[in-house]
Image 1 (cartoon, rainbow, N blue to C red):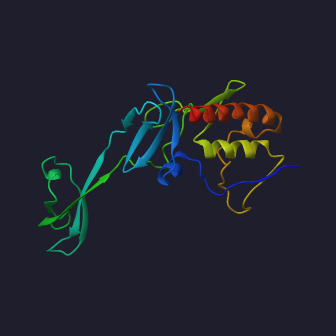
Image 2: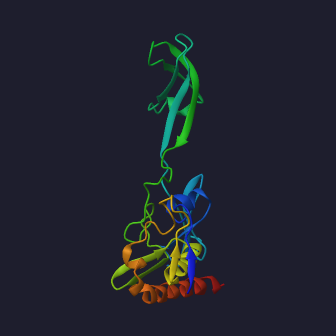
Image 3: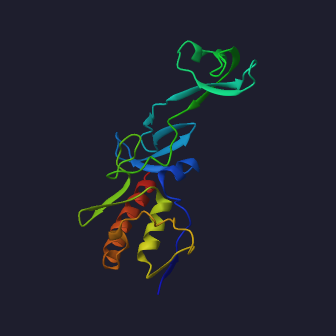
Length: 208
């Protein structure tokens, strides 16, 4: 009997992968080869075969914050004026006593890959590209985010006995897997489908 001990948390969510420097594999829109989505200061899609690249449009949030020189209260005000956004320091009126203060302007990306970004219909949430490790089983989509996730799915689904890592922590790696992927009656068919995807991945990386 093959046992498998599940992993804690949701290590294969798109949010977790990108925030931990791991790629999400998608199908390149130019050559249909494997392309990687990464988040290194900006979210990018880059193909390792034809070198095609796309960048996810960046949105910025500008904030002026500091302690008022008059009422000595801390404030954090959003700056929407395009002219002010070009400067390192801006004059802002205190929202409490309306005294003018010169404070630093902070610029942060607001697109951030958050937990709200999820895979829908086998497509990534940024570029709307099909995941590269994607297949069907009896009309239903099955996908893996990257090769590490694919290996996890094969090991988890092929196991006769699946052990939870903790009785007290509800979230684990298989938490969001649909029921049809967990059903014993589908085990052999889904594993075979995933193994074909694995062969596709290995073949794409054998091409020089």
